[in-house]
Amino acid sequence: MLTTAREYIDFWIENSVHAAGQYGTPGASQSVDVLVDRLVRGAKNQNITRAAIEKEVGDLKQYIREKLATANRTEQDRR
Image: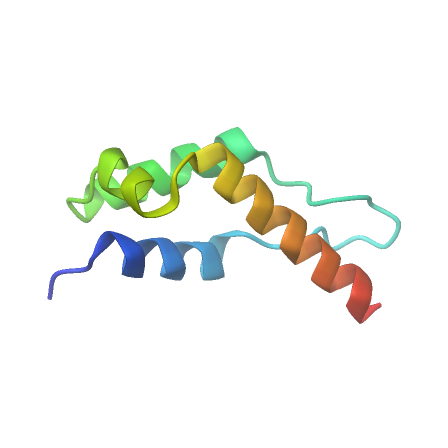
């Protein structure tokens, strides 16, 4: 079954971008650059190009940075 770029991005974000787990730690401890590299490598294994991903979400660093910020806000609100 073929996976579209959007499907892959959504699945990957859901399973790979998480809020910081330690109390008192401001922001996610994940590196945006590392996450971008992992996303691109994983997509390549699914025959999805970086260009296809960027066509869906725009700037990858900014997109992942926003996802991390959202995860962290959600975690802060939960506490």
